Image 1 (cartoon, rainbow over the protein chains, first blue to last red):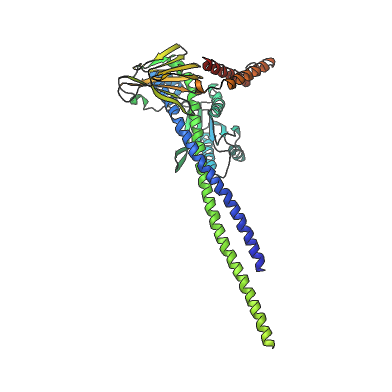
Image 2 (image 1 turned 180 degrees about the vertical axis):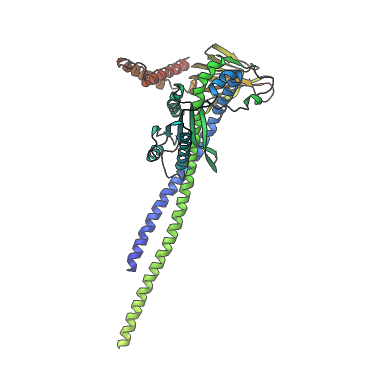
Length: 297
Length: 143
Protein backbone atom coordinates (compact mmCIF):
# COMPACT_ATOMS: atom_id res chain seq x y z
CA UNK A 1 0.00 0.00 0.00
CA UNK A 2 0.91 3.64 -0.34
CA UNK A 3 1.58 4.00 3.37
CA UNK A 4 4.26 1.30 3.16
CA UNK A 5 6.11 3.14 0.44
CA UNK A 6 6.05 6.28 2.51
CA UNK A 7 7.62 4.49 5.43
CA UNK A 8 10.42 3.09 3.23
CA UNK A 9 11.14 6.56 1.87
CA UNK A 10 11.19 8.04 5.34
CA UNK A 11 13.77 5.46 6.37
CA UNK A 12 15.95 6.19 3.35
CA UNK A 13 15.85 9.91 4.01
CA UNK A 14 16.95 9.29 7.56
CA UNK A 15 19.88 7.19 6.39
CA UNK A 16 20.91 9.79 3.80
CA UNK A 17 20.82 12.45 6.50
CA UNK A 18 22.95 10.33 8.81
CA UNK A 19 25.51 9.85 6.05
CA UNK A 20 25.47 13.57 5.37
CA UNK A 21 26.30 14.26 9.00
CA UNK A 22 29.34 12.01 8.73
CA UNK A 23 30.59 13.46 5.46
CA UNK A 24 30.05 16.99 6.76
CA UNK A 25 32.07 16.21 9.90
CA UNK A 26 34.86 14.67 7.81
CA UNK A 27 34.84 17.73 5.58
CA UNK A 28 35.28 20.04 8.56
CA UNK A 29 38.03 17.91 10.09
CA UNK A 30 39.88 17.78 6.78
CA UNK A 31 39.54 21.55 6.40
CA UNK A 32 41.16 22.13 9.79
CA UNK A 33 43.93 19.66 8.90
CA UNK A 34 44.64 21.52 5.65
CA UNK A 35 45.54 24.66 7.54
CA UNK A 36 47.75 22.72 9.92
CA UNK A 37 49.59 20.79 7.23
CA UNK A 38 50.09 23.95 5.18
CA UNK A 39 51.62 25.61 8.22
CA UNK A 40 53.97 22.66 8.56
CA UNK A 41 55.07 23.02 4.92
CA UNK A 42 55.79 26.68 5.58
CA UNK A 43 57.74 25.84 8.75
CA UNK A 44 59.81 23.30 6.83
CA UNK A 45 60.74 25.73 4.06
CA UNK A 46 63.74 27.46 5.72
CA UNK A 47 65.37 24.09 6.42
CA UNK A 48 64.69 22.79 2.94
CA UNK A 49 66.04 25.94 1.29
CA UNK A 50 69.07 26.01 3.56
CA UNK A 51 69.83 22.40 2.75
CA UNK A 52 69.62 23.17 -0.97
CA UNK A 53 71.96 26.13 -0.58
CA UNK A 54 74.50 24.01 1.29
CA UNK A 55 74.41 21.29 -1.37
CA UNK A 56 74.71 23.79 -4.20
CA UNK A 57 77.58 25.54 -2.50
CA UNK A 58 79.36 22.27 -1.80
CA UNK A 59 78.78 21.10 -5.37
CA UNK A 60 80.30 24.33 -6.67
CA UNK A 61 83.25 24.00 -4.32
CA UNK A 62 84.40 20.79 -5.91
CA UNK A 63 82.60 20.06 -9.19
CA UNK A 64 84.66 16.91 -9.81
CA UNK A 65 83.69 15.27 -6.52
CA UNK A 66 80.14 16.48 -6.92
CA UNK A 67 79.92 15.02 -10.39
CA UNK A 68 80.99 11.63 -9.15
CA UNK A 69 78.42 11.73 -6.39
CA UNK A 70 75.58 13.55 -8.04
CA UNK A 71 75.61 12.42 -11.64
CA UNK A 72 73.08 9.97 -12.98
CA UNK A 73 74.75 6.89 -14.41
CA UNK A 74 74.12 6.18 -18.09
CA UNK A 75 72.85 2.72 -17.42
CA UNK A 76 70.51 1.95 -14.59
CA UNK A 77 70.33 -1.79 -13.97
CA UNK A 78 68.20 -1.61 -10.83
CA UNK A 79 66.13 1.28 -9.52
CA UNK A 80 64.20 1.89 -6.32
CA UNK A 81 60.77 3.45 -6.68
CA UNK A 82 59.13 5.02 -3.63
CA UNK A 83 55.42 5.83 -3.91
CA UNK A 84 53.85 8.14 -1.33
CA UNK A 85 50.12 7.67 -0.69
CA UNK A 86 47.76 8.05 2.26
CA UNK A 87 46.76 5.59 4.92
CA UNK A 88 43.05 6.19 4.46
CA UNK A 89 40.64 6.35 1.59
CA UNK A 90 37.60 8.61 1.12
CA UNK A 91 39.91 11.19 -0.35
CA UNK A 92 38.88 11.44 -3.95
CA UNK A 93 41.57 10.59 -6.46
CA UNK A 94 44.51 11.27 -4.10
CA UNK A 95 45.63 7.69 -3.58
CA UNK A 96 44.70 6.32 -6.96
CA UNK A 97 46.44 9.00 -9.01
CA UNK A 98 49.74 8.53 -7.18
CA UNK A 99 49.40 4.75 -7.43
CA UNK A 100 48.59 4.89 -11.14
CA UNK A 101 51.57 7.15 -11.81
CA UNK A 102 53.71 4.70 -9.85
CA UNK A 103 52.39 1.78 -11.84
CA UNK A 104 53.10 3.55 -15.14
CA UNK A 105 56.62 4.43 -14.02
CA UNK A 106 57.36 0.85 -12.99
CA UNK A 107 56.07 -0.39 -16.32
CA UNK A 108 58.19 2.08 -18.26
CA UNK A 109 61.32 1.18 -16.31
CA UNK A 110 60.68 -2.50 -16.88
CA UNK A 111 60.25 -1.94 -20.60
CA UNK A 112 63.65 -0.26 -20.57
CA UNK A 113 65.12 -3.38 -18.98
CA UNK A 114 65.51 -1.99 -15.48
CA UNK A 115 64.77 -4.12 -12.46
CA UNK A 116 62.48 -2.27 -10.08
CA UNK A 117 62.37 -2.51 -6.32
CA UNK A 118 59.20 -0.98 -4.97
CA UNK A 119 58.72 0.81 -1.63
CA UNK A 120 55.64 2.66 -0.46
CA UNK A 121 54.32 5.00 2.19
CA UNK A 122 50.65 4.46 3.04
CA UNK A 123 48.37 1.51 3.62
CA UNK A 124 46.77 1.60 0.22
CA UNK A 125 49.84 0.84 -1.88
CA UNK A 126 50.61 -2.78 -0.98
CA UNK A 127 47.17 -4.07 -1.92
CA UNK A 128 47.04 -2.05 -5.11
CA UNK A 129 50.37 -3.31 -6.39
CA UNK A 130 49.87 -6.89 -5.25
CA UNK A 131 46.66 -7.05 -7.26
CA UNK A 132 48.73 -6.04 -10.28
CA UNK A 133 51.41 -8.64 -9.64
CA UNK A 134 53.99 -6.23 -8.20
CA UNK A 135 55.42 -6.86 -4.78
CA UNK A 136 56.06 -3.90 -2.47
CA UNK A 137 59.25 -4.64 -0.55
CA UNK A 138 58.31 -2.52 2.40
CA UNK A 139 55.30 -0.38 3.25
CA UNK A 140 55.61 2.40 5.78
CA UNK A 141 52.27 2.96 7.46
CA UNK A 142 50.77 4.95 10.28
CA UNK A 143 52.18 8.41 9.67
CA UNK A 144 50.97 9.50 6.24
CA UNK A 145 48.50 11.95 7.86
CA UNK A 146 51.01 13.63 10.10
CA UNK A 147 54.57 12.77 9.20
CA UNK A 148 57.34 13.63 11.64
CA UNK A 149 60.96 14.13 10.68
CA UNK A 150 61.84 10.88 12.44
CA UNK A 151 59.48 9.10 10.02
CA UNK A 152 61.24 10.68 7.06
CA UNK A 153 64.53 9.55 8.54
CA UNK A 154 63.31 5.96 8.81
CA UNK A 155 62.11 5.92 5.22
CA UNK A 156 65.31 7.53 3.97
CA UNK A 157 67.44 4.99 5.83
CA UNK A 158 65.61 2.04 4.31
CA UNK A 159 65.52 3.24 0.73
CA UNK A 160 69.06 4.60 0.73
CA UNK A 161 70.59 1.36 2.02
CA UNK A 162 70.58 -0.51 -1.33
CA UNK A 163 71.90 2.60 -3.08
CA UNK A 164 74.77 2.97 -0.62
CA UNK A 165 75.52 -0.74 -0.97
CA UNK A 166 75.70 -0.26 -4.74
CA UNK A 167 72.81 -2.61 -5.53
CA UNK A 168 70.76 0.10 -7.19
CA UNK A 169 71.85 3.05 -9.31
CA UNK A 170 68.84 5.29 -9.00
CA UNK A 171 66.10 6.11 -6.48
CA UNK A 172 62.90 7.64 -7.79
CA UNK A 173 60.03 9.20 -5.89
CA UNK A 174 56.38 9.34 -6.92
CA UNK A 175 54.43 11.75 -4.75
CA UNK A 176 51.73 14.37 -4.81
CA UNK A 177 53.08 17.90 -4.78
CA UNK A 178 51.07 20.59 -3.05
CA UNK A 179 51.31 23.53 -5.45
CA UNK A 180 48.47 25.46 -3.87
CA UNK A 181 45.15 24.82 -2.17
CA UNK A 182 43.59 24.46 -5.62
CA UNK A 183 46.25 22.42 -7.35
CA UNK A 184 48.00 19.23 -6.35
CA UNK A 185 50.00 17.38 -8.94
CA UNK A 186 51.52 13.91 -8.97
CA UNK A 187 55.17 14.26 -9.75
CA UNK A 188 58.10 11.93 -10.40
CA UNK A 189 61.39 13.05 -8.99
CA UNK A 190 64.86 11.62 -8.75
CA UNK A 191 66.02 11.34 -5.15
CA UNK A 192 69.36 9.63 -5.67
CA UNK A 193 71.74 10.53 -7.10
CA UNK A 194 70.83 13.92 -5.65
CA UNK A 195 69.58 16.23 -8.32
CA UNK A 196 71.30 19.58 -8.25
CA UNK A 197 70.05 21.97 -10.89
CA UNK A 198 72.63 22.44 -13.65
CA UNK A 199 72.18 26.18 -13.64
CA UNK A 200 73.61 26.60 -10.16
CA UNK A 201 77.10 27.41 -11.34
CA UNK A 202 75.83 30.39 -13.32
CA UNK A 203 73.66 31.60 -10.47
CA UNK A 204 76.54 32.12 -8.08
CA UNK A 205 77.35 35.77 -7.61
CA UNK A 206 80.41 36.58 -9.69
CA UNK A 207 83.57 37.03 -7.71
CA UNK A 208 82.37 34.81 -4.90
CA UNK A 209 82.80 31.63 -6.84
CA UNK A 210 85.49 29.38 -5.41
CA UNK A 211 86.01 31.52 -2.34
CA UNK A 212 83.88 29.44 -0.04
CA UNK A 213 85.70 27.65 2.76
CA UNK A 214 84.82 24.15 3.74
CA UNK A 215 85.27 22.30 6.99
CA UNK A 216 85.87 19.41 6.54
CA UNK A 217 86.83 19.26 2.87
CA UNK A 218 84.16 19.11 0.22
CA UNK A 219 84.32 15.49 -0.76
CA UNK A 220 83.84 14.27 2.78
CA UNK A 221 81.20 16.91 3.39
CA UNK A 222 79.20 15.82 0.37
CA UNK A 223 79.28 12.21 1.50
CA UNK A 224 77.82 13.16 4.88
CA UNK A 225 75.49 15.67 3.40
CA UNK A 226 73.83 13.37 0.87
CA UNK A 227 71.78 11.32 3.38
CA UNK A 228 70.69 14.51 5.20
CA UNK A 229 69.55 16.01 1.92
CA UNK A 230 67.65 12.83 1.13
CA UNK A 231 65.88 12.98 4.49
CA UNK A 232 64.96 16.58 3.88
CA UNK A 233 63.57 15.81 0.41
CA UNK A 234 61.52 12.90 1.70
CA UNK A 235 60.24 14.92 4.62
CA UNK A 236 58.99 17.73 2.44
CA UNK A 237 57.42 15.20 0.06
CA UNK A 238 55.64 13.61 3.03
CA UNK A 239 54.43 16.99 4.27
CA UNK A 240 53.15 17.97 0.85
CA UNK A 241 51.55 14.56 0.47
CA UNK A 242 49.73 14.99 3.78
CA UNK A 243 48.51 18.46 2.80
CA UNK A 244 47.35 17.14 -0.57
CA UNK A 245 45.60 14.25 1.12
CA UNK A 246 43.62 16.55 3.41
CA UNK A 247 42.75 18.93 0.58
CA UNK A 248 41.61 16.05 -1.57
CA UNK A 249 39.58 14.59 1.26
CA UNK A 250 37.95 17.90 2.04
CA UNK A 251 36.94 18.31 -1.58
CA UNK A 252 35.62 14.75 -1.82
CA UNK A 253 33.64 15.09 1.39
CA UNK A 254 32.19 18.46 0.35
CA UNK A 255 30.98 16.83 -2.87
CA UNK A 256 29.53 13.92 -0.89
CA UNK A 257 27.70 16.33 1.41
CA UNK A 258 26.24 18.21 -1.53
CA UNK A 259 25.19 14.93 -3.04
CA UNK A 260 23.50 13.88 0.18
CA UNK A 261 21.65 17.22 0.23
CA UNK A 262 20.38 16.69 -3.32
CA UNK A 263 19.42 13.12 -2.66
CA UNK A 264 17.61 14.04 0.55
CA UNK A 265 15.70 16.76 -1.24
CA UNK A 266 14.54 14.59 -4.11
CA UNK A 267 13.64 11.76 -1.75
CA UNK A 268 11.60 14.19 0.34
CA UNK A 269 9.76 15.30 -2.80
CA UNK A 270 9.00 11.72 -3.76
CA UNK A 271 7.86 11.00 -0.24
CA UNK A 272 5.56 14.03 -0.16
CA UNK A 273 4.05 13.00 -3.47
CA UNK A 274 3.52 9.47 -2.13
CA UNK A 275 1.86 10.86 0.98
CA UNK A 276 -0.36 13.14 -1.02
CA UNK A 277 -1.29 10.27 -3.32
CA UNK A 278 -2.29 8.17 -0.36
CA UNK A 279 -4.37 11.04 1.07
CA UNK A 280 -6.06 11.57 -2.29
CA UNK A 281 -6.79 7.87 -2.54
CA UNK A 282 -8.24 7.90 0.97
CA UNK A 283 -10.48 10.89 0.24
CA UNK A 284 -11.62 9.24 -2.97
CA UNK A 285 -12.50 6.13 -1.00
CA UNK A 286 -14.44 8.09 1.60
CA UNK A 287 -16.25 10.13 -1.03
CA UNK A 288 -16.91 6.98 -3.02
CA UNK A 289 -18.23 5.26 0.10
CA UNK A 290 -20.50 8.22 1.00
CA UNK A 291 -21.72 8.39 -2.59
CA UNK A 292 -22.57 4.71 -2.49
CA UNK A 293 -24.48 5.09 0.82
CA UNK A 294 -26.46 8.03 -0.48
CA UNK A 295 -27.42 6.39 -3.74
CA UNK A 296 -28.68 3.36 -1.78
CA UNK A 297 -31.25 5.53 0.03
CA UNK B 1 77.20 48.63 9.53
CA UNK B 2 78.17 45.04 9.33
CA UNK B 3 75.60 42.81 10.95
CA UNK B 4 75.18 39.10 11.41
CA UNK B 5 71.84 37.42 10.90
CA UNK B 6 71.53 33.99 12.45
CA UNK B 7 69.01 31.33 11.53
CA UNK B 8 68.73 28.11 13.50
CA UNK B 9 66.37 25.86 11.61
CA UNK B 10 65.11 22.30 11.95
CA UNK B 11 62.88 20.44 9.50
CA UNK B 12 59.86 20.98 11.75
CA UNK B 13 60.33 24.70 12.32
CA UNK B 14 62.68 27.65 12.33
CA UNK B 15 63.90 27.56 15.92
CA UNK B 16 65.32 31.03 16.10
CA UNK B 17 65.96 33.81 13.59
CA UNK B 18 67.49 37.11 14.54
CA UNK B 19 70.38 39.46 14.66
CA UNK B 20 73.44 38.49 16.65
CA UNK B 21 76.97 39.64 17.28
CA UNK B 22 78.53 36.20 17.12
CA UNK B 23 77.85 32.49 16.79
CA UNK B 24 79.98 29.81 18.43
CA UNK B 25 79.76 26.15 17.46
CA UNK B 26 81.95 23.11 16.94
CA UNK B 27 82.60 21.40 13.62
CA UNK B 28 84.55 18.19 13.04
CA UNK B 29 87.61 20.43 12.55
CA UNK B 30 87.19 22.08 15.94
CA UNK B 31 85.42 24.98 17.60
CA UNK B 32 84.81 28.11 15.56
CA UNK B 33 83.24 31.52 15.95
CA UNK B 34 81.33 33.37 13.28
CA UNK B 35 81.40 37.16 13.38
CA UNK B 36 79.88 39.67 10.98
CA UNK B 37 81.79 39.82 7.67
CA UNK B 38 82.87 36.19 8.03
CA UNK B 39 83.95 34.65 4.74
CA UNK B 40 81.59 32.24 2.96
CA UNK B 41 81.85 28.89 4.65
CA UNK B 42 80.05 25.58 4.56
CA UNK B 43 80.66 22.91 7.14
CA UNK B 44 79.28 20.41 9.58
CA UNK B 45 78.35 20.79 13.21
CA UNK B 46 79.07 17.98 15.62
CA UNK B 47 76.52 17.40 18.39
CA UNK B 48 77.03 20.02 21.07
CA UNK B 49 75.95 23.39 22.29
CA UNK B 50 75.70 26.27 19.82
CA UNK B 51 75.94 29.71 21.42
CA UNK B 52 74.58 32.89 19.94
CA UNK B 53 75.56 36.27 21.38
CA UNK B 54 72.86 38.86 20.95
CA UNK B 55 72.27 42.34 22.26
CA UNK B 56 70.11 40.89 25.02
CA UNK B 57 72.62 38.29 26.12
CA UNK B 58 73.57 34.78 25.18
CA UNK B 59 71.27 32.13 23.76
CA UNK B 60 72.27 28.49 23.86
CA UNK B 61 70.94 25.70 21.68
CA UNK B 62 71.50 21.97 21.98
CA UNK B 63 72.16 20.92 18.39
CA UNK B 64 72.21 17.18 17.72
CA UNK B 65 74.42 17.32 14.67
CA UNK B 66 73.92 19.28 11.51
CA UNK B 67 75.42 21.72 9.04
CA UNK B 68 76.04 25.40 8.79
CA UNK B 69 76.44 27.83 5.98
CA UNK B 70 77.75 31.36 6.14
CA UNK B 71 77.48 33.79 3.29
CA UNK B 72 76.58 37.34 2.40
CA UNK B 73 72.88 38.05 2.24
CA UNK B 74 71.24 40.19 -0.40
CA UNK B 75 71.46 43.51 1.39
CA UNK B 76 74.79 45.24 1.88
CA UNK B 77 76.93 44.27 4.86
CA UNK B 78 74.62 41.55 6.17
CA UNK B 79 76.19 38.15 6.77
CA UNK B 80 73.76 35.27 7.03
CA UNK B 81 74.69 32.27 9.15
CA UNK B 82 72.32 29.33 8.82
CA UNK B 83 72.48 26.35 11.15
CA UNK B 84 70.65 23.31 9.78
CA UNK B 85 69.95 20.64 12.35
CA UNK B 86 67.83 17.51 12.21
CA UNK B 87 67.08 17.89 15.90
CA UNK B 88 67.79 20.96 18.02
CA UNK B 89 66.26 22.85 20.91
CA UNK B 90 66.76 25.88 23.11
CA UNK B 91 68.58 24.84 26.24
CA UNK B 92 65.95 26.70 28.26
CA UNK B 93 63.29 24.43 26.72
CA UNK B 94 64.99 21.23 27.80
CA UNK B 95 63.08 19.14 30.31
CA UNK B 96 65.85 17.87 32.57
CA UNK B 97 63.87 15.16 34.32
CA UNK B 98 62.63 13.85 30.98
CA UNK B 99 66.14 13.79 29.57
CA UNK B 100 67.28 11.98 32.72
CA UNK B 101 64.62 9.27 32.30
CA UNK B 102 65.46 8.98 28.61
CA UNK B 103 69.10 8.53 29.51
CA UNK B 104 68.34 5.80 32.04
CA UNK B 105 66.03 4.06 29.58
CA UNK B 106 68.68 4.16 26.85
CA UNK B 107 71.34 2.86 29.23
CA UNK B 108 69.07 0.03 30.29
CA UNK B 109 68.38 -0.80 26.63
CA UNK B 110 72.09 -0.88 25.85
CA UNK B 111 72.86 -3.03 28.90
CA UNK B 112 70.08 -5.39 27.88
CA UNK B 113 71.38 -5.45 24.33
CA UNK B 114 74.90 -6.14 25.57
CA UNK B 115 73.80 -9.49 26.98
CA UNK B 116 72.46 -10.60 23.60
CA UNK B 117 74.54 -11.82 20.71
CA UNK B 118 74.02 -9.05 18.15
CA UNK B 119 76.47 -6.25 18.77
CA UNK B 120 75.59 -3.84 15.99
CA UNK B 121 71.85 -4.23 15.59
CA UNK B 122 69.53 -1.40 14.59
CA UNK B 123 68.06 -1.35 18.10
CA UNK B 124 71.51 -0.93 19.55
CA UNK B 125 72.31 1.95 17.24
CA UNK B 126 69.03 3.60 18.12
CA UNK B 127 69.63 3.23 21.86
CA UNK B 128 73.14 4.64 21.48
CA UNK B 129 71.82 7.64 19.55
CA UNK B 130 69.11 8.11 22.17
CA UNK B 131 71.71 8.04 24.93
CA UNK B 132 73.88 10.58 23.13
CA UNK B 133 70.93 12.92 22.67
CA UNK B 134 69.90 12.61 26.31
CA UNK B 135 73.45 13.22 27.53
CA UNK B 136 73.82 16.28 25.33
CA UNK B 137 70.52 17.64 26.62
CA UNK B 138 71.61 17.17 30.22
CA UNK B 139 75.00 18.71 29.55
CA UNK B 140 73.48 21.68 27.76
CA UNK B 141 70.76 22.28 30.34
CA UNK B 142 72.94 22.09 33.41
CA UNK B 143 75.72 24.26 32.07
